[in-house]
Length: 152
View 1 (cartoon, rainbow, N blue to C red):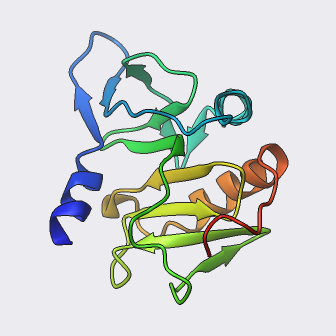
View 2 (view 1 turned 60 degrees about the vertical axis):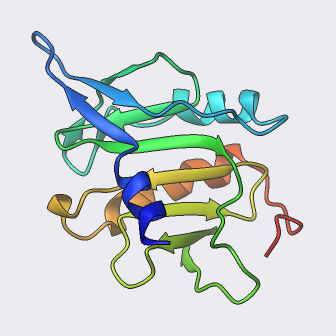
């Protein structure tokens, strides 16, 4: 299980680039019927998150975004989290429920009970994740319909 969290932490890697920054992100196969709402969400994400500027990502994708160094990463349409159970501890931010991973010191949060799962990775160097979760939650609530049948 610990391996899974290290893998999640490795989702985003900063690459050296000329003037701006480019972030290499782990591609994934988006869940069916999530491409359009996820692309709308990602297009509406802010240029700055937790004081970090939005970066160019590789490979290019309509369903992923990144900010800063070390990078904050967002992937929309990811598969259902393996650790999501009926009794999972969820954190409610605005109208969105997030699954913190790992539970004791989360650096990754997955929005659940939406038409698409959204993974937000926030390095500990940014401090408390509340600001990022709040800002992203507003957009998740706006772009992704609530679904009670998401497995929770």
